[in-house]
Structures are given as structure tokens and as C-alpha cells.
Length: 324
Image 1: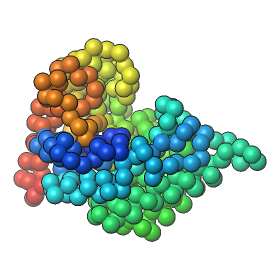
Image 2: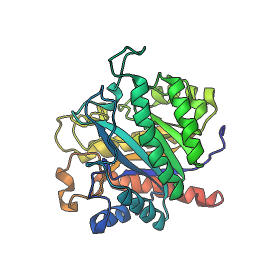
Image 3: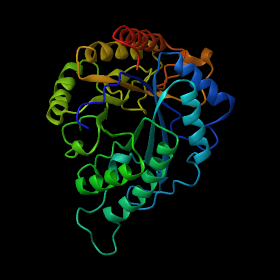
């Protein structure tokens, strides 16, 4: 599917990490409605299952804290009722706090040691389970993985898994590579759309977009940021991927980061959009927005920045022949 997907994505990640008991009810419904009002037309429903350590080979996705299948279906159906297109995004986390990018095993199998083969068997069961739900519920996109930097080199395993997904899911397939990895994935031809995590520092957008552009043109595939965002903290614009940064609450810095990103990306004709990070299933009180230093822009200056930009894109799409 070379370069035929032409969506304009005004997206938001909703519901992370998909904690059991939070996807449903009045608070979750309110959250989705508030999100839609920003001009959002796509939502990534992001849920996580937790393996115990980076070298564990079992992913117990049917257990808490992961949301239930009923909750997942509710979120998909409610999003669609609101007129949103849906990307279902199951992600593996590590229960001990290690970032998933560090999940890794010996390159060659060693008897008695945990292996890539064992891990991909469990990961495949996890991904195929949600691919079937995505097909049954009519999700427009499915994401087969997120920021698996150490696993990215396992080309044969990814190709085999994507082929299995295509047997049960007929929609658009993407993989969300990590920042700085866009040109390093060697199997982009196996998916329909290239996507990545665009957590790039202020002052570097032109440089990074030049690099990404080369990869997009090499593979002749559509591209969008499956994740991108910046916490509302002093100093976070210089390291927007660091959720543990210790700066004080700073709405202005977050808003300025978004303005810079949107301005830079808007000059690139191959950039098809953004799925911003992130929008929780339970929103904080709006009067607490000024003291909230996380990624969500609800009630903050960046909310208006996003709304203005997304609404302008919707208007432009309508004028060009109808909003997608």
C-alpha cells in the first residue's frame, strides 16, 4: 500500500495506560467529548499490558491492570459515536518501570536462557488478540508496536507477525518507532504507514524533519507522528520525551513548543498529521490546570494552541473538498 493513505490526522492519544476500570462511565465519556471539541478527528486508544521484567517472555494481557475487552470495545464504540476514526494501539510495558525500548534478549538463542522466539510468541498472541477486536469493531487503523528499539532489528519476526495480523485485520497497519529511529527500521515496506514518536527538542525541528523526510521518501510511504507532545514544565521543551523531568509547572513553555512544532511541520507536504500525547480517561479539574505539569493540555494555554491549529486544518480540508 505505497503512499495511497491520504488522511489528515488531527489526533490525540486517549486513555493511557488503559488501567482496568477507567475505560467507561461518565468520567471517561466526558473526557472523550472534551477531547473531540479540540477539532480531533482521530483517536489512538492506547492500552498497556505489563511483562514483569525486560527479559520476561510472558505478557499477561488478560489480567489487571490491563483494561478488559469490554472496556476496549466501549472506548472504540463511543469514539465512533462521536465521529472519530480509531487507531487501536496495544503496547507492552515493563512492570518494574524499565522502558519498553530496553526489552531485549541474546541475538542467538542459548539453551536455558529467555529468547526472542519465546517473547515474540507471547507478544504475537497479545497483538493478534487486539487485531481481532480492531477488525470486529471497525477500527480504521491498528498499531502493531510502539518504541521497541531493541526489538526493531528482529526484522524476520516483525514481518511474520505483520503477515499474521493481516490475516485477521483488514484495515491500515502502522508501527510506531521511537524518536531518531525513522531511518533505522528496515521493514517499513511491511506496514501501510510509517509513524514515529516526535518528541524533538525546541530549536531542532528543521534538522529532524530533514532527516525524517529522507526516510519517508526512501520508502515512499505516508507518514504521521503517532506520538508527539511536551509536558507543561520549565525545561521540558529541551527534552520533551522525559516524563520525569523535574521542572516547575509552565503552561507557556508547553504552548510555545507546540507552536514551533506545528509551524515547522506545516511546511512539509508529506506530514499527514499528529496524534498528540496525551489525554487521560479521567481529566483533572480545569481549575487545577495551571498547577498540572503533565502532557495533557486540558485547560492550559496549549489547549487553545492545539484547538486553533486543528480547527484550521479541518477548515482547509473542507475547502479542499471535504474533511476526512
